[in-house]
Length: 84
Image (cartoon, rainbow, N blue to C red; front, top):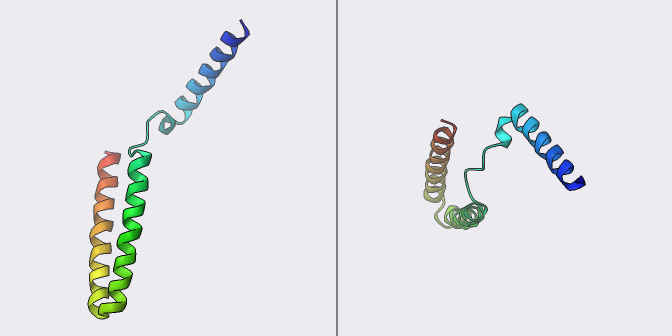
């Protein structure tokens, strides 16, 4: 009996919270595995671009700026599409 009451109270609390904050009801868009893979890949790419800036001088800086611009634009477009 007590377990059913607690479950019902929990369900009521969750329903109120999701009514007040709709963002709690939707699931995140990316999986944890994808985010970890993207973070590791981004770190490796940044490391390689840092080496390119030192080794190639101005050409490496231009390459890094171009890559950062393209990735930033891609992330902005993806975020815009997810909100729609």
